[in-house]
Image 1 (cartoon, rainbow, N blue to C red):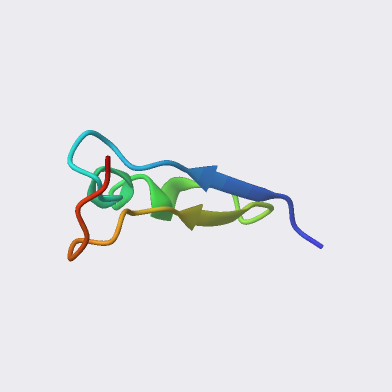
Image 2 (image 1 turned 90 degrees about the vertical axis):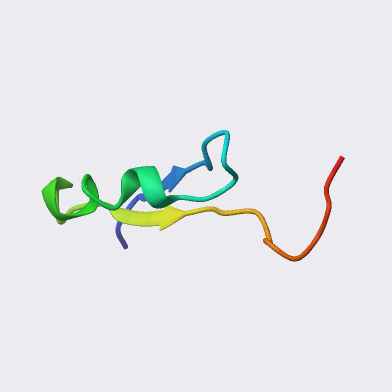
Length: 43
């Protein structure tokens, strides 16, 4: 079982910032990019 690497969203609420990083991560990790739902207003 691979360790999970959780990448939290940036100020824009998406994980777009991490797209260039993902190909360079070690295969020993399982990346999970978290993003906020774009159709809901969150407080």
